[in-house]
Amino acid sequence: MKVRHSIKSAKNRDKDNKVVRRKGRIYIINKKNPRMKARQG
Figure 1: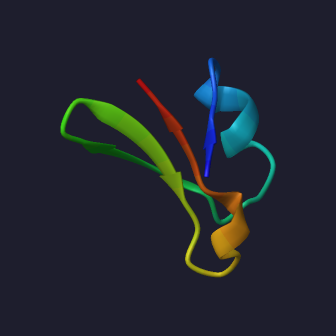
Figure 2: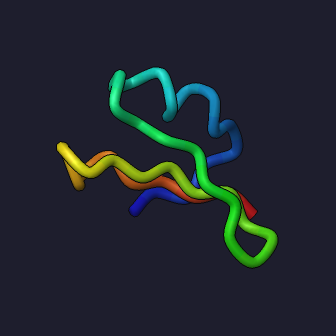
């Protein structure tokens, strides 16, 4: 999982990416391609 300053750039890498907020952090998750994980905060 990558920790990024800009979540927008990570979200645009794959059309199946979803933005999820958990415990004050923003995560990018992708069920079809699990390598596309990222978090911010």
